[in-house]
Image 1 (spheres, rainbow, N blue to C red):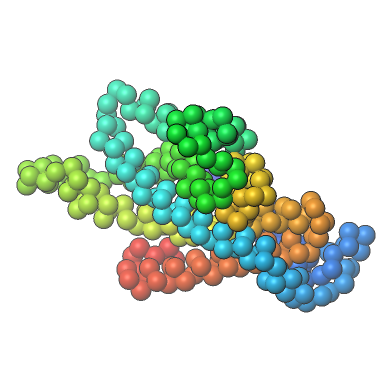
Image 2 (image 1 turned 90 degrees about the vertical axis):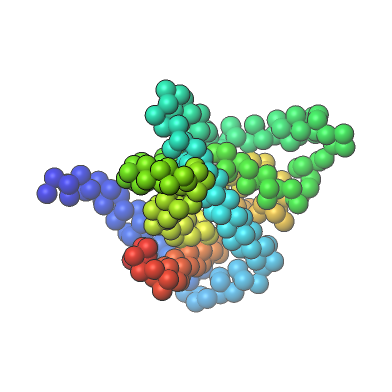
Amino acid sequence: MVLLLMCLPALIWLLLFKYATLAGSWIAFTNFRPRLGIFGSEFVGLRNFEFLFSSAAALNASRNTILLNGLFIVGSTIFTLFISALMFEVFRSRFAKYYQTTFLFPYFISWVIVSYFVFGFLSSNGIVNGILSQPIEFYQSPGWWPLILLLVVIWKTTGWGTLIYLAGMLAINPQLYEASRVDGASKVQQFFTITLPLIMPLVIIQFLLSLANIFNADFGLFYQVPLNQALLYDSTDVLDTFIYRALVQVGNVSMSAAADLYKSVIGFVLVIVANWVVRRIDPDKALF
């Protein structure tokens, strides 16, 4: 009973902000007028979605959202596992807390501050161009930004992911490593034969949860870090920034709601499909 009461605040938050607000999805099917309200506005069916799919900017934002978030999921997972393995090896060192703090600190820095860091490196007079013999105008070159954003995401989020995977590694029976050392296994062999297989369910769960949010791009990352440069939209414009501009510049609430509902439904479908694939391969590793 006590444990259920501890869950009550989170459950109330979930009901109020995740389920009660679902009624607002009706806006996506109307020509919303504030004075008429959500249910008093004219019903237009799928007209808002037709406009969404016929817009080149929306299709570009959808493509970037999937490709960039997919790149982030794969790149962050690989790098986080690598750092977690290193942290696992030095966990009992007196410097372990220092290493953990160093990796975790960027997670708590706002995207506004991060954008200044990135600008200091990539501006015309920045650190990178000071090193290069042939300067590059990064804020006018969209081709560089998938790599730049990936590096920024890895730097900022690795510490948080490391906490999760490190906790899973610490739960592994130490006798397994002792037996492998007796057999002459190296640290790399121990990672691929013991550590990785045993934390794979945790990796899969994290992957499925990330996949659910693959259409929910981090607005701060894509809006603040590229400084909302129109020249970079080909590589950095995602659904969240597209929806923001639709609200601020056009004021079309219905189209913005349609785009938001669209990405939520696609994310839900992706999780169901991915979980079905995992269940077919290994039922014990499926999320549900």
